[in-house]
Length: 247
Ligand SMILES: [Zn+2]
Ligand SMILES: [Zn+2]
Image (cartoon, rainbow, N blue to C red; front, side, top):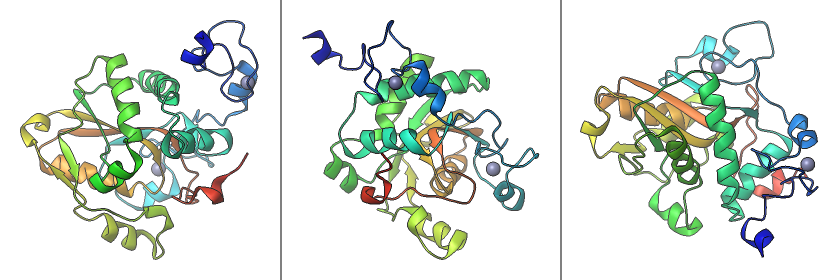
C-alpha cells in the first residue's frame, strides 16, 4: 500500500533497485553518477562548456535577453527520459524529485529572486495535455525556496511551434516566438528579480522571448532555471517522442 502511494520512496527511479535509505533525488548513487551533471556551465546560458571559456560560442556571438540560465544536467540519456515522462506520460510524481535537484543547483549558484513563474503553455496545449509540466516543477521549487509563486502573471498568447525543430536558424526561431507572451500583471514584476522555470533549455528562444516581455513590463532581472539544457548547438528536443526513446 505504501509503495503504491509513494512509488518512488523505496526504489531507484531508474534501475528500480531498492534504496537502503530514502534518497533525496529518488536515484541510487550508481544511477545518479551516470548522469551528465553540468559542473562548468556557460556563465550566460548555463550550457555545458566544451572549451576553456567563460561563455559558449552561441552566447559569445549573440545577445541574450535573460540575465542568466542554469540547469543541473545535460539533456541526454535518462535525463531526457525524465523530461519526456513528466511531459507526455503523466508521471507527475517525478516533478518533486526534479524540483529538488533544480533547487539545490540554484542554491549552489547563489541566485536569489523575488518571485517565480513557470513558462506558460498556450491554453490549447495545456488543455490537451491536462497540465503544464513547468508549472509542476515551478510550484515545487517556489515552495522549497519560499518564493511567491505567480503562474498567472504571464500568458502565452501564441501557440508556437517547437523552436528546436524549426529550420532557418536563429531568425526563424525568433520570428516564431515573437510576441508569444503577454504580461497580464506588470505591477507584479516591476523592479523585481524574476525566476522563470521550465523543463528544458534548448535554443533559449522561449526563455529570451518571455524575458523580453518581462523586462518590458519592468522586471529588473530575469533568471531561468531548467532541469536540463541541450548540448551547445545540437538541440534534440522535439514533440515527437518516438525520436527520443533513448532507453
Ligand atoms: Zn539506480
Ligand atoms: Zn551560453
